[in-house]
Length: 255
Image 1 (tube, helix red, strand yellow):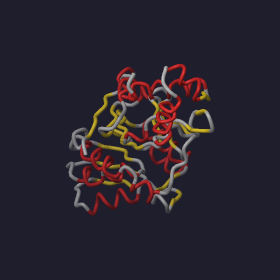
Image 2 (cartoon, one colour; image 1 turned 135 degrees about the horizontal axis):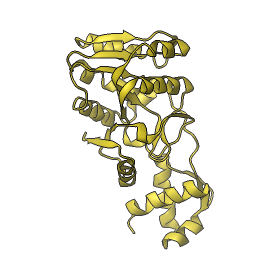
Image 3 (cartoon, helix red, strand yellow; image 1 turned 120 degrees about the vertical axis):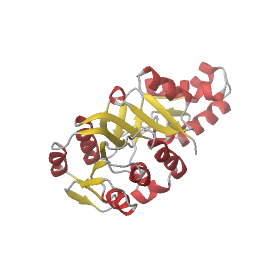
Image 4 (tube, one colour; image 1 turned 90 degrees about the horizontal axis):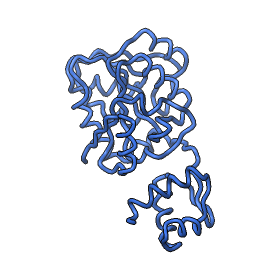
């Protein structure tokens, strides 16, 4: 069995059991302990498992770094995802767009689509689209201001969202597991994402490959609620197959 075939099975076993020893994995897959340690090292680097002495555990819930740090993570993949978004959004659509480094990377792409109506809680996104010379009508939702993300959150934003209906919600998430769905590390952001989903006909999620297989504290939606996921070319085969089984349309973008 090749590593790319064995590693998803190791990950699934650890998630099911909670904690599994290196020795047990070596016996289960009939390979050496060193081979298992290499597999676990790669899985740990991707955030799929947590390595501890002599064994591996299910990963801890993630806590996202600052907006500035997230902008530099997988920047090439996010740019490619943003370009591919232009194939999904139709001229004249009304869209919700949430706050995130990936949705912000898509600002110029959205600015180039004629006739959009954009409802967002991201001050940076609204400003960047406007400065790009878009003819879009932009509604910036007002609420409690968060300086790091330059976003508005809270009950005021959620109440305002109830007055809108959109063709599409375009969201970025902190974590995405095909079995458990999309998740966020911020309660405020998860609540706004859920409100956008409730008032949109379709849901598009922008998520680079590093977001898959991770877990965060706050549920956004079930995988089956997602109509389209746009990701990058590095998504693992196991995740692709799981999304296909859930009936999700998956687009992969090339850098």
